[in-house]
Length: 441
Ligand SMILES: [Zn+2]
Image (cartoon, rainbow, N blue to C red; front, side, top):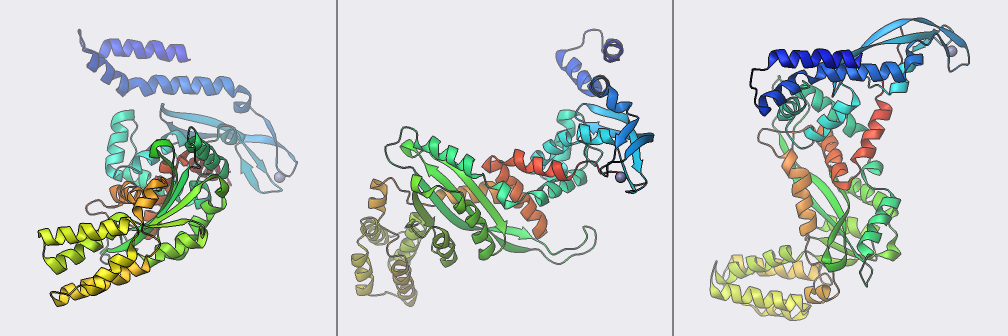
């Protein structure tokens, strides 16, 4: 059968192509017609490997009764290699009032027309590109036509099945990455735990065509854990982002916290000034070294300098640099003392000085950047900010895109899984729950 298909296909290629086709012309022609050939090959393999199952006359029901084949049912299945039609034996148990196709389970068919090989790739593509563009690119690269609606629906279903327990790497994988960070290092690797918020465009429920309420920006909260190995090399451990509140983020952080062998790492907590971040981090890692993100801190210092000495003046720069140097050396007392003695030049300057004093007092013990550096600890939350951008912004913030919270979160779980190296396991979970259903006539 496969040989005949090959002969027919070659004859057709001969007939279709011009006298002196270019390589590209031949390649394009292959792409347009290969499904006819590969589909026949696929069918031939199934016929050969499942010869018995295709002709099965008897089956045993879950209840133990012996059943006889009722009929054959046709099912059209679309794969990366073309669409074929299978005639599957059908069995029905009168007592259980349930029917089934044993071959569907053996082949692990999907309940939808497009099978899992296609679904896996469109989901990965849809996680990176807008859905319409994903459908176009997928068709262009594979010759298989799907729709943006199909890609969106499948991605939502994969994202709904993905739990945070599975999106976050398991204890064995975390341990393996710690080992990797430990290689060649003399000290225990530093585990950086950082939290941050990002803005996600969301919309209230409502039909696509009917008028719906205005979109609004919600906070997507996230954390990232990564290891600093030899030469400060970054080894990613886990990311999690979710449109939701502090309590939900804390629950997710609890999942990864429980999988960490703490004695094998030195824990560093990094955050900007926001109080919720410190609450969440300290709830799970009370022993962690606390570090206020240097760049946020510097921003506040520069703001105060500008308010007091004017934007872009030499005085402002000198003051800010002196203040930051003292903070780096952990001379907090000198800095706050200096602030107290400052004579505000305007009401705005007074307000800025007051705010900086409160800010620094609130983060005492989270500064001292010079010492942190000596100990190989980070001083910034650049790691979480790049994760925010990579995971949330590049896909959620598209012009005109406003997300239903549930769909936005499904997307974030998938993007985190890709980033965490757990996409294969969440897709396996999805396949297990979206196989072809037994049929009830
Ligand atoms: Zn039965």
